[in-house]
Amino acid sequence: RKEVEQDPGPFNVPEGATVAFNCTYSNSASQSFFWYRQDCRKEPKLLMSVYSSGNEDGRFTAQLNRASQYISLLIRDSKLSDSATYLCVVNMKSGGYNKLIFGAGTRLAVHP
Amino acid sequence: SQTIHQWPATLVQPVGSPLSLECTVEGTSNPNLYWYRQAAGRGLQLLFYSVGIGQISSEVPQNLSASRPQDRQFILSSKKLLLSDSGFYLCAWSVGQGEFFGPGTRLTVL
Image 1 (cartoon, rainbow over the protein chains, first blue to last red):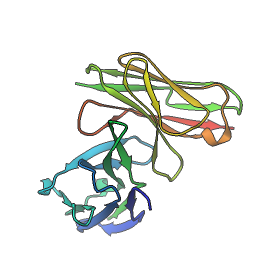
Image 2: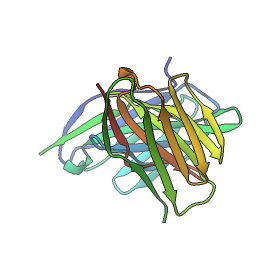
Image 3: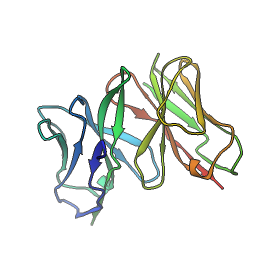
Image 4: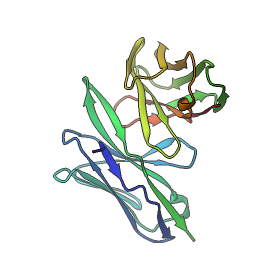
């Protein structure tokens, strides 16, 4: 089983739609969770951290379900500029050091 | 504010040639530094990480090596490139939560 699993998509949605991505992780000891956004042929950029209580940043809402070991990202009122690949990221302790494990990403394409 | 630089942006190298990619960070002290590789259509694979000068940990066996000669400088090297070394190489830094990436080097080995 992969450490972080995501549906690769693509999710094709019209502008204004609401879209949700899920991600599951295998290490129950993970304590930090993030969503990154990666545009085509660019570096990943931190979109938001994910907190246990859930958190919102404008049109983006992230939620964490520790019991089921899954993380979600909800995007409301999709814009054309939201088209990108969204990476689910989970931390893992390895040799006393915290390292991040990246999912392969979910592709989102927003069309007019 | 912190910035991270990588160069070159793109590189085409023949099989068997050496490689040196450089990454520098500004605006922070004693960051953790990382090298990742992303093959076409794949996720990020952590290659090396460093918690300080001269301290390098390797995540996967390969024909690459890394060095950290200064606090804010991280270098990825190879003596002889393989076709399978093609990919998008990303340097990242962190001082706590989350990691922040440089613009990357797109390497094509022919």
